[in-house]
Image (cartoon, rainbow, N blue to C red; front, side, top):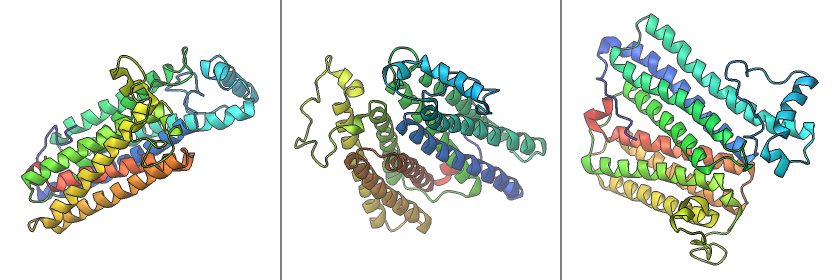
Length: 355
């Protein structure tokens, strides 16, 4: 992902006030997207994602308000593979508990859409949005609409035969969420201030770190999709092994990378460790540099600190066998680490960062 495209020019002084208004609006949307990532993690961890077996994008705002409506939506869930093969023990009261998180997840997504569209129309009518920003805002609109469609596409994968959503679709859904967050943050930073002076070598390092974080996130989505965090709950070894014995259990070999829980967990561990090492090395290089601005150093230190917290959260989540609160914190930590990496890259981008 290259958050600096499409490009736009820095604001003139007379545009500064309007740009701040746009930046504050988009920053609010970014916070909502971050919360959506956390809510999505909780929805997954509580296995609530398949509780709403129908897609009602326009009239699905109101939850069931009567017993008759509750029994109607429960009967739809009873027809799903998840109920028939896994949760046939559930009563309607049990169902209401898992229904809550999926309902909140969907409604929050719609609220994000309103939080984006309504201020956009108001600001556009009053001429507060520069023309050069429209391509970026159009990209965000398209990504948001695509994300809603991907969400239902993901849910549908668990309503056919297998009582679980596809880990492939889950990874795409999470990846698009992070892409939206990245574009939002880059745009906000470009509207609020100019970037630092830039350092070509450190910028390349920061680009590599950002891509490694994104790869770690996608690998984590496969862990979540396969419930791979519920096996090999030891660290640093995997039940006494450096590489789990069933790493290459499936054939052909490549299928292990995406469908073997042992392989998926091992790969996530390795990628996460490499990512943190790259972050630490970026910190060392930044501390050695005499030319970096204080704000750039602050961004690098924030990334390193958040990276360390995220590693600790990941290990704790694994050792504790993925309790909901730790798993949600780990997913939120991933979003904050990614956000810090976007900030670092912006600060190191020189004049290009304002584009």
